[in-house]
Length: 149
Image (cartoon, rainbow, N blue to C red; front, side):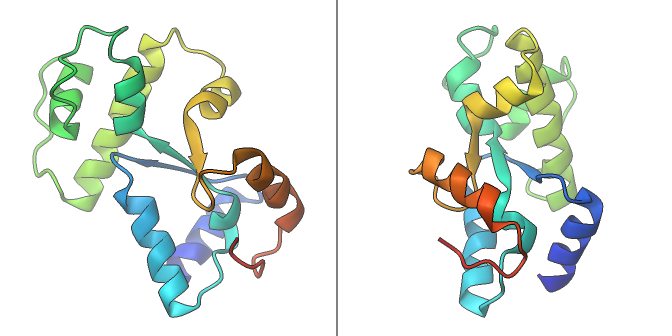
C-alpha cells in the first residue's frame, strides 16, 4: 500500500487524484486497509471517487440502457457497442471497463465540463456524507501525514 501511495503521489504531481470504480467497494476497501495498517492516506485524503454504478443509476434514463442490468460487463457492452469485457473481476480488466463506461456515461450527459461532472457525481474517499466540510478539510490538509477524518 505504501508503494501504491508513492506511485499515486508521484503520478499526480500535486494534482487531486480521481479514482474510478464500479460500486463502492474499491475505495472503501482501500480506506479500510490503510486505517487498519495505520498508514496515512497521503494523496487519497483529497481523492475523489467516480463510481460508475452510481453514475449509471443517475444517468441511464438519458441513455438507451436497461436500468435493471447495471453490471459493469453489461454497461461495458453498451458503451463499446457489443464488445465483451472479458475476464471480469480481474483488476486491470475491471479498471479499463470502468473507465470506458464512465467516458460513455459522460458522453451521454452531453459532455459537461469535467469540473461540473466531478462536482455532480464525484464523492470524496474520506467522509462521503459531509461534502462541504471535507472540501474545506481537503484544501487545508495537503500534507501526506494529515490525519484521517
